[in-house]
View (cartoon, rainbow, N blue to C red):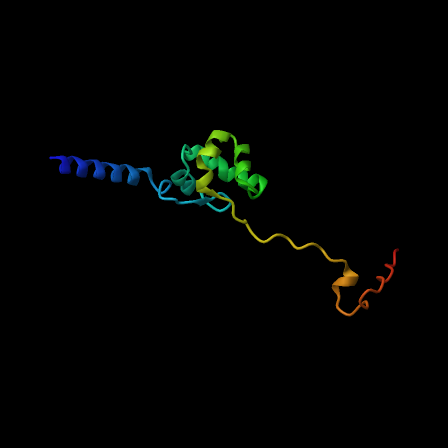
Length: 123
């Protein structure tokens, strides 16, 4: 009888872990690329409206730079951020723009190494 009880408890625990979803299994979500459905599925305490708010904030303000910035989203507080910190990753939304180069140095062979740039004619 004890073995049956232990087996039932094990099955119940397994079921509870399965119901809890990917969050307990160590699944992480990139808040810069995930859609609202994925955010809702993985993050604890984030339902459909909060997930949509995260996506909307990202679209309006650009990619998140840190997990803590998630607290700027309306409806997401510091407690929610802390509860989900291990489930969130902040990936790059795309390559960073390259800095603009001056026209004189952009063309190859226009100036010798270490030479002063040619003056720019002004009209």
